[in-house]
Image (tube, rainbow, N blue to C red; front, side, top):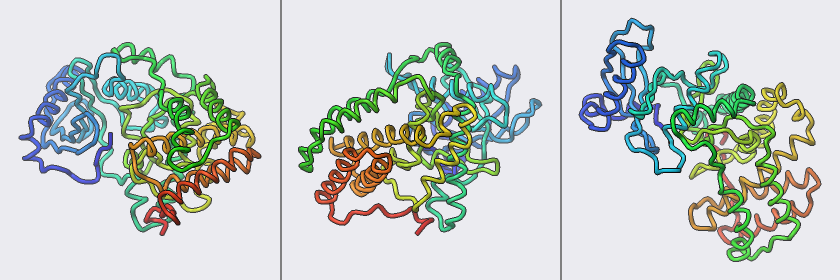
Length: 386
């Protein structure tokens, strides 16, 4: 889900008349009263538009004897998830519970103030109208955008470091709210199995058996129990607030524990899940990886070895690029310039590690995509870096 916190959205009066907003406010008041043992009014609701299943509302607390913040954000999930499917409410509630149990300086997100499974509602601290990482990237200040990206990478690393080894805690909390515990993403193995055929069909490039085996092995390695930590999963730049205390993550509707190197690979394939990703300047990804690593080597000292870290990153970079390409060639997306750029980058990183057959294949796919969708495709930089 993407939440717009940079605009006030619908005017307060109109928002109050929206049945979905009214239901969210009522649910918020009920859960706050239950949590604190006294009625707490929520006034001046503002609907914050988003793309997920939750109704998201900012509301003001006119008076409270409990030291609550002046404004809060309510996330109300009126519809239950299909049976057996991951429940966005459960994922988000448990994610916030996990972080709220940490020391304040270790939280990479707003504080959870109250939640209720029956009402399917969360009330969280309002971080205000701080700019998002997306705002910084789409702005005109290159230095500010660079600082924000490095802060994002450090916050991501700190999130991984503070939640490493806490998978059992997360699963226990998820059982308590009734969410299905194990739901590993089946997309990577499906994409890796199907992409070679799609590449040959659409751009006439065959995939050598050695490259297929490498991709299949990378997929297996990604499911290992090493380097597991909490992940927001959705790493879109508009789901991250740039605050004075660092970048804070907002959206945990898909949050779960997985291999943290999957997230780290997004530093090389930035914002791969976005519909319109743009490029970062030369050297930015390397600086972000270094910032991320500085936060996690305390819990995973093996990643201080460049050979170890870069081998893991190549595995997950490959999977991100293959999944993104499979999505486009299977007709579920349109971002050919991004694909050409990402395959070229995969070529460079594979060559650097001596994986020459993988590099050669990546080079051929990049050229084939450029010929099919181009020619001369190049992913433009985010506006802040132009």
